[in-house]
Amino acid sequence: MENFTMLQFFEWYYPANSSLWNHFKADAEHLKKIGIDTVWLPPAHKGMAGNQANGYDSYDLYDLGEFDQKGSVATKYGTKQELIDAVAAGKAAGLKIYVDIVLNHMGGADQTEIITVRKVNPENRNEFISEPYEIEALTKFTFPGRNGKYSQFVWDYRCFAGVDHDVRTKETAIFSIQNEYGEGWQQVMSKENGNYDFLMLDDIEFRNPNVREELKRWGKWFYETVGFNGFRLDAIKHMDPTFFNEWLDYLRTESGHEFFTVGEYWEPNDLQPMLDYIEITGGRFSLFDAPLQGNFHEASNEGIKYNLCAIFDGTLVKANPGLAVTLVENHDTQPLQSLEQPVKAWFRPLAYALILLRADGYPCVFYTDLYGSTYKDKGDDGKNHTVTLKKMDEMETLLYIRKNLAYGKQRDYFDHQNCIGWTRTGDEEHSDSGCAVILSNGEPGTKNMEIGIQFAGKVFVDYLNKIGEEIIINGDGWAEFKVNAGSVSVWALKN
Image (tube, rainbow, N blue to C red; front, side, top):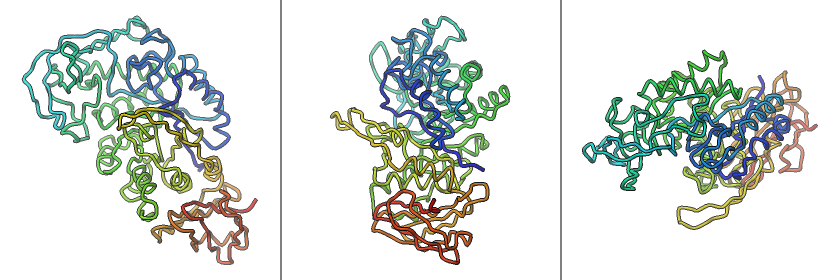
């Protein structure tokens, strides 16, 4: 088997100049060449902020940059044709394409409606704090710019379970919509705030069978229009999990394709709800390993105080490696974002070694670690900040090692809290494969590790060029491997 690697091909602050699809098209062959196999693209539809929208504020799922809506034809990332051309170029280069699916909520409705609601306690959404009363809410979506092309479905208040704004009084609160599908919230997995069905904007009502059918029709249309290979599902902890069971089963049956799928169930401090979610969805799709990303964040902040032997404790990749998509960072965890939990620059090469060079998990590389980024935004302190995320110098070498060398039996040496390592023995399918990885979050270190008798007498060098000397494997297949302070070295056969 070949090692596969995913790339998240965007970051939150990518410039709003409608250039991303063309950027991907131009870079597709290069990405395949350096060891990327699958690419996760951002939401392709029109958001409520038009060409400034990242797509997580869904307005019209059928507008892929084709209609003059919300002040622009193109989305932040480009036009519909540029998207189709980019996906075709990616597939021609040998890449598989995963698209971001945002079905928890919608925003930017075209008309208001007078609807009956009950206000809820935001700390405990199961507790009503008002009797039923009427508000004016932005809940009717008619998409006048599209004028019924592709779908004539009109979204109104019966398609939503909750809203957060009364247009008439300008009040912002959490309102449970009283409709024929229930006066309370939908059953979701997350018990945060009593029930975490409501996240933002107009919360989609999956108890309405017409909504489920429309979203299945849309999914089929989206696939037939763009021709992608899989999905990334947004905000699934806020949604009825049985909907995605039905939606995915329908699309897989209709298309005859597997559609690799990974969901965002973000619980960095609690693995159990993620395992429960996998059970209720019957293992239909993978999840991002949020607890592992949380461990990386903590390790990068604590430095030598962090016990590296515990880096995989409480993680999905340890509990269910076959359904774990491992990551170091993403668009939500980057500095100044909603789930800000960045991994400091010194630790990023160590973290990437831990997801790219081990046997378990499906690793996802973040855009800024390959390309870098500089941006400005307001922080929690209300002040403007400039953030520079430098691209990681070691990234392409680590991708090369993953694609060519990190194969075979894995032996772990997690026996010192500040210095851990492992070896991969290599396999017959990948010539000269096999490697020894050693990490330190403290002082310079050495570790005696077995790589295999097949390497006896062979010369090994550090492919990351952190250490200049050579190491010779002894007659029993062991060697003393070295690492610098707060660093990672990957030892493999000298070319």
